[in-house]
Length: 154
Image (cartoon, rainbow, N blue to C red; front, side, top):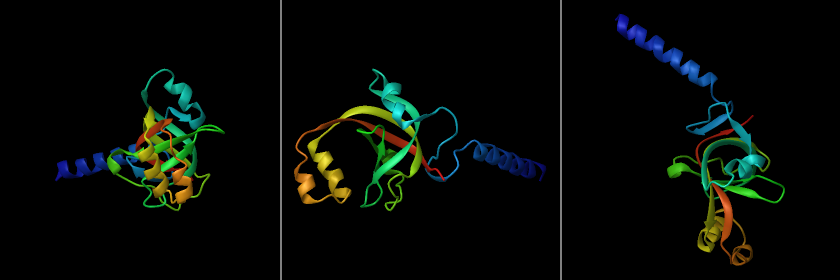
């Protein structure tokens, strides 16, 4: 009986300790722990010459997949955005999340070239018009972020 009670106390303390260390807000996937969070405007410089880097990023949502919330676009400068997908499609974001929503994401930023087919697929999922989709004729060099956890910051 003592072991059971001690185990329960240990679990409660461990849970409380982890909860206080997490970024507050609506959490998805693995959530995000506090510490070493960089603004989205610094993603490019944090990557430097590396192709891929593990990081936590706080930024502003520009758009979310309107089909099922399976990706989002986060602003990294006045002219540039970052495509954010979710590890193993393990979670999705609310598809009605408004532009300007602040999020913190934890995962890997990577410099990639996204194919025309993929760009058109994402445009369809974002409910773009056929005219807008037809204008996508070139692959895009961009930063793609694979998030294992995300938090909508209140």
